[in-house]
Structures are given as structure tokens and as C-alpha cells.
Length: 99
Image 1: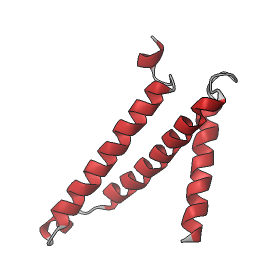
Image 2: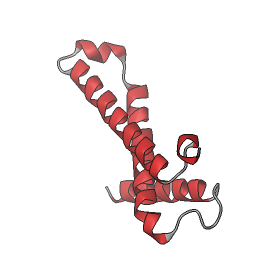
Image 3: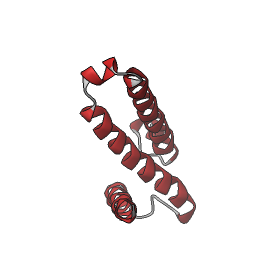
Image 4: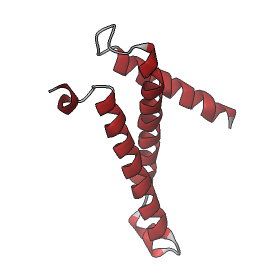
């Protein structure tokens, strides 16, 4: 389990640098850092869920509970995407929020 935490922390750091590096130096004042951390967490989780969905096999839907697991993963990914979109807009990272 400890490795998962380190991997997640490293993934968060990569996302943070990637997002912050694309914007002007004063774009993220300290009060926005919690939102930025949240965005990075949602991005990492969405990628993990995408990997699970990519690995899901159609024949598993025929198994007991398989379709429900697929539906749950899809809903979880959708929830992550909605949270990412909301935070990106609040942080003025989307075209929609800048114009």
C-alpha cells in the first residue's frame, strides 16, 4: 500500500508542475492552491479509472455483477470529469472561463 501512496503523490506532483508550468507565474495565488491540489487529485483518479475501464472485458458483463461493476466505474469516471471541469473553470484554466 505504501507504494501506491508514493505513486499517487508523484502523480500529483507531475500534474501540478504540468498545470502550473503552462500559466504565468502569478496565475495561482496561495488561496487557489487547495483547488489546484483537488484538480490534480481528480486528474490522477480519472486516469486510474480510465485504465480500469480500458482493461474491462465485454465478457465480464455476462458474469454476475459484471455489468454493475462496469456501470459503477463509468459513473465514477464521469464524476471525476465533472469535478475536473468545475475546478478547471474556477481556476480559469478553460477557454470558457477566460472569455
